[in-house]
Image (tube, rainbow, N blue to C red; front, side, top):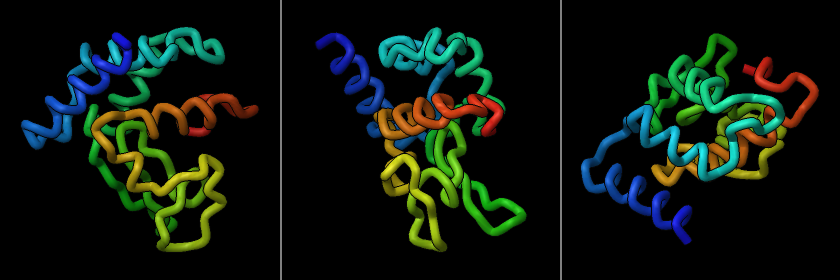
Length: 126
């Protein structure tokens, strides 16, 4: 219950302020509640660094790559492999729309990131 409430409060705060950035501390709390600290051997610091390097904690970031594919959200998850952006053929390994990765509640992005790091290459996928 506490976990759901915290995620709801963080997403409500972001929605009310029409913000696309999440603070490092708020993100750390959500990642901790979603059991990412130690997930597949990666520390909370690893996850925070990944989010910072990829998006500067910008939940709504979309980036076009040189190959024409797009990266989405906090973890900059690629639409060619991991989600469906309806722009080109996608493997859609996470079985979701790429727009879901831009949701302030962060859960879609977290679940997809967990799936990504569970593969053989781990965080080297980024």
